[in-house]
Length: 262
Image: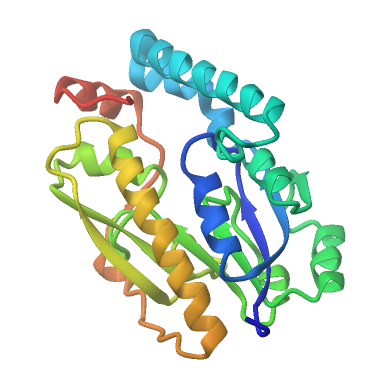
């Protein structure tokens, strides 16, 4: 396709879901760069809170799974990405597909905004980028910035929808692709879909379903913008719930319900 959008991906470090979704997107657009935003709100930097929320056993279990994934990553590198195809980290999926990769700490830094302008970007795609983006960067790409969020917006806006879906005993969840604004999970909706959560007991199970759906919805949203067929639906945030990080007490209630991290 000759009219592929020139896209920059903004995300955070992820070993399990986002790399595959980036690869899917790369098949329908021209990804100029993959940018990891390393901020205090990145999940990798919430380890201390995870111990408070989920306890030693669940964190140790997650640690063992993560170590296993890291071993797969190094085997994948040795094989020239023939085993896991770069899906064990954002950096590796970039390298496996010949896409430039960089790490930044401030999304709204003037130098980074200038860099995006210099790249002549059509669209920025966000997969769980962990910082609020301000107007100058929002207005830089030709078609703005779109984000995938792991809930059915406008409900379950904010942090850790996988936690709050389980905490609230929801049996249905979903994912939404929306335009970003200077407010959290606030912009117009482009694509949205539902998933069944009735069999999910852990956040990892919820994320597996919502991230898979979200990645597919993002591909469709990119194609619709590319083809000029994207339809915007108002994100009626006054009709949905907003959640922040859980308290220790809420995490205790979460565990008492038999819910788990992994």
